[in-house]
Image (cartoon, rainbow, N blue to C red; front, side):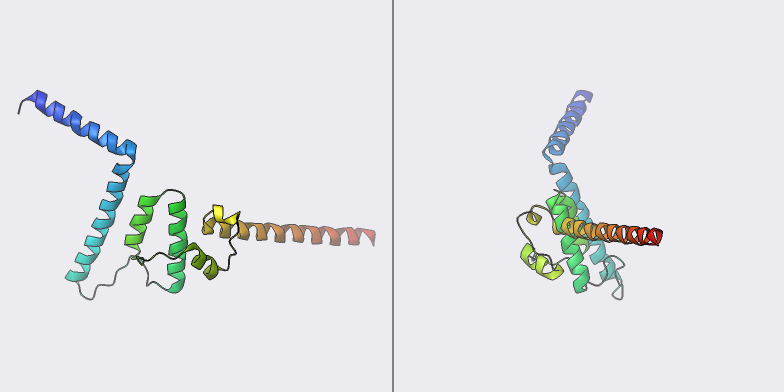
Length: 153
């Protein structure tokens, strides 16, 4: 191989890499590769040490599974599909995805036209934040009423 061929091969590889990056496929390939490597390493560790207990994901209780599903829905809604796929692999999540209706029922959220435009995790955070703000305002109002009553006396 002469020097010109090496340069043109390098340029070709760079061009392919740039095309893959622009189309979003490079990130997808990298995420899939990370997920597969993680899976292989976990399997290898378990086969070499039969008594090995993975330090990765905790035992999947119903609460852990629910939180993982909420986080995954949030990631997918924001377009972090590759991150969601790596999380699914790393957390050993079930392959059958729960529906939004099932998730709503489990967390006690009533989905309506407005709330269905956002991921459930965002709705939960917004509702909690709003509740805290109302409590703070109520405390301020109550303490202001007490101060006004004390001034009158």
